[in-house]
Image (cartoon, rainbow, N blue to C red; front, side, top):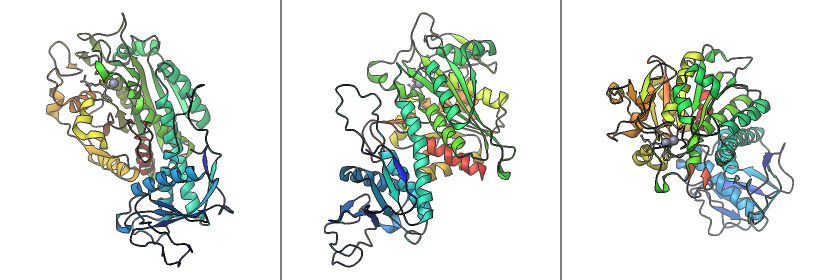
Length: 486
Ligand code: BES
Ligand code: ZN
Ligand code: ZN
């Protein structure tokens, strides 16, 4: 791992040259081309590397007609691991030119490559103690290129990854440190360093406002719940973005024990990642603010810790939500929708957002349905859905559409209150979650719910990610917001 990655102002003197090759355009091994020694055994497979005796590196990009942004991220991830072993301090990138691919330009390619490099150059080393065997980081790595567009692309990719890695760092912060009150401090630090505005609705105010969902879910913890509202209000809004206010809402359960509907056996371990929806929003707000995006955006984090105590809420409680809907709690483990409901009402009615996109690690059912490949997306508005799908395609944060119909809403009704938080029939949990949330946004307002329960963290190392948080959703939200800004 390198301490950091940065981009120089031109080619780096004396640093190795990294050249990209497709399986169908291999460097000549007979001594022609750039390298005198050839590349015996090198096939150009995606992410494959070959180090010449002079230190230059050949990087495989796979088949030319199969090149995608995601393959460049993978290639970047594998490249940085090779450079790490070589312990270089600089590298000149000549990976691909504009003619290399019909669909991907050199700058766009450089963004993806740098993204992959910086995502793979991240680890959790902030809790190392006296017995650590974590290797110290190498000095910073400087990337060079003779082309300014490539350098710009690299810088843009590094900036995107920095926002993702910021989200990952907070996501990795354990629940004995990161609780709702700690989140207030973290939001303050973010606001101060980026110029975002921050409003905190604390426990007392939430009670006064009648935010029954947020208040009851967070009641049992000594670290009381809060609603964090970050605002990016640029001096200049793009013509296309006039009249648009985008609200990004993220489930921030700093720990989910299940409450009295306690999680059993192995179900609880890893529930520090139940805040990953909120982390996606934090990371995206970081980027939106630092890149001065000409679009009005709110980031809203309902923060609570779902605990067991003598004052915790229980199954059978009937609570009244911020928008006046009464909810019978059938399961205290379906807590995410309760805190999100109040946050959605706040975005819809108080902030008057024109578009709402909400991310949450809401149900284990979405993992069963879709596996760890993508998030499930529920949306009431075709144009917004299209935007979310486009952002998923460009960012690599994949989504798949799930249904949300009137029948699903009716499924959530109950006799002693307006609705229940989880139907005891146990069918279609992910859809139930979405249907519940649909009661808290005006039916005419475009809104989307992304169930990211399968995507917040990985349980083993992948090309771009070490075991732990992925920052899923940060890049999707950045691309979505950039698309809306025009
Ligand atoms: N935080 C969980 C969902 C979850 C499960 C996230 C696995 C990540 C991995 C959520 O609050 C929850 O417990 N959901 C219940 C819903 C049910 C009680 C309606 C679930 O999925 O079982
Ligand atoms: Zn739960
Ligand atoms: Zn949860």
